Length: 513
Image (cartoon, rainbow, N blue to C red; front, side, top):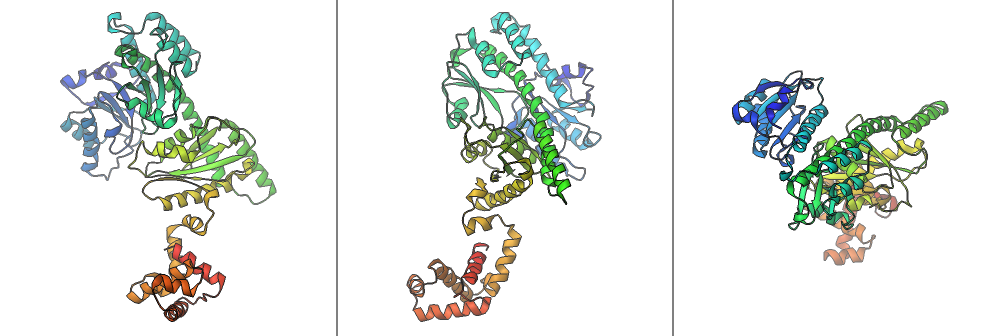
């Protein structure tokens, strides 16, 4: 399929804003939808790029537009299809930038969905492949017919993969995600742990082929063929396109699930009621929402809140991908009205074959290591009525995870908050600073040498459980000097270090700095 073929599809109603000559005859290899400001690392050469232009605002400078278009050019994209729905029209500044960098630009009207464009491209590509002569190693006609029938019957991915490779002798092939979650494998393919499966597509000894689908670094799909000679390249590409059709159906179901999850989370966030009748109504609504999400009517449930930079949609994808590593625990993942990524999980302590979230998280983070990725996990709640409190727990645990590894990745459960330091980590930073400043008084800023010495003495004194002798030995001071410094600390802070509650106040203030 070529770029100009899109303009001949009346059902899409696309408008060419800029494009000329050979640029319109370039072959299309696939489709990627993105609204990242710099999507280069997620694009493949020859792809059409669909964008709703969410990354652009009328007050954005030319540099923002040029950065986006330059990323497309560097990645080898064939064309940009820009949606008109967000802003009402494609901005002129984008037209100018595409013209300068040689990127074909088409406008997508509000009534044309990106999914319709994606389907049109893949259907056209599939038709082109089916008409190619057999010497190009296309799938045999009987195999294509069988696979089409299996797709129509919603066959399992293992069945599709097995039948696709059966005429080749059933070589070892797996369909895996970027995090090493095995979606399907042929009977000859060995079971691999998630960490090893994540590395398999990139192994020098094998062949990896990307499966087209919704763009995202955390849930990318790839065919991993251990023996490069196991299938002719053209056949392997056709099998990849069959699996892309399967993925499309999966994504349609996931999109419907997202809408249901968003509704469930909005109910959980609203929470709270003024009386027994309202409480019963809230509980009934939550139970109905759980049913719509395909979750059991009885618990226990856990809530997971996640954060991952500024892209809430990608964080939802990361969270959902992590949770899919435990197929025995169904979940509903979406976004709260404020954009926060959250999931409700039906926790089953007896479920087999899953991985704890903390073990999966590094694999998910490795897909985009430059972006911090954190999660907070609530304790179990027995019924739907406890989801609101569980959401509060998850948010608090998430704050603790961010405080513990601000630039990296961490999962924190409320059950991990077993020390004063861990508990305080979930308190908002501005609250911690205010508390520390109020309790420590003049010592809070340690602006002078004497104040820094007093803080050092206080830390050592508390660390040694109020022992004058051990504090003096650690700091290489005379015991009388320690007594003098402690008296100064008590005077400046208004606290009595012979009292346990005052010691706790000062210890908490030190931890909150």
